Image (tube, helix red, strand yellow):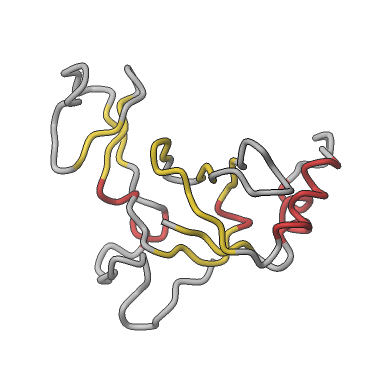
Length: 138
């Protein structure tokens, strides 16, 4: 799974902050540096509204946690294939009613991204793109 970062990722980050939230200027600078880049996602830790990236050489040794507002395009989307357990924190492949790691059911969270939940009647290919309109753009 890969994500293409918006060309104005720094501004998207700044716009996302509330009036009283402090600005992390180091992070804002990094958002400026990765703007427009195609970055690999670490699929070991998945969320339905954000992603963790692998390290980006020369910019971040640990990778980034990025929210959807800085992502322009998702390639090879896989989040819709999993549920994450809020009890043990591990992911299980769908369909499942119980976590395959701790056998709990009440803690399972669907990891399907918002755009796939918002438009459930549309079909998506394995790139997370809408088939009727082509590339998904945030």
